[in-house]
Length: 192
Image: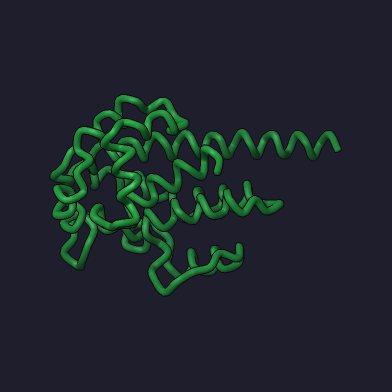
């Protein structure tokens, strides 16, 4: 798994799953012990250290639920609920066209979109970079700034405020990486 995929998978999982979910236990162990930093491809040591200070899944459960769960949640994690966000059906159609196996769960969830970006990266199809750029530009970036800002404003725990800041920086770095990869790809086509 490459760096892009790792970042998308870690951040996507932390937003997409309840903190006490058993599938997140190994990730929280890496966070609590400070070992995620040695595997983290971006220069975000200060933010990772702040995440480590608040990485208690049981303590985070109430904040996660208040932020993201139910009709009375403080911050909707679904793009379709945001002014510039995509319709869930659009995202579903895009991912189905890419061949991604989907469940009935909404696919316009912020965490699910990052997990989809990881999946696209791991599939490494011929036009994978264009698919990832489309996912970022059409379905994630138009609304994620407002979403992450609300998470920072409404989170009761330092964990989710820090995760929002870390996510914002990571998304920017990944989009820049995609632009560089696209330029390299175009330069390679020109040489052919």
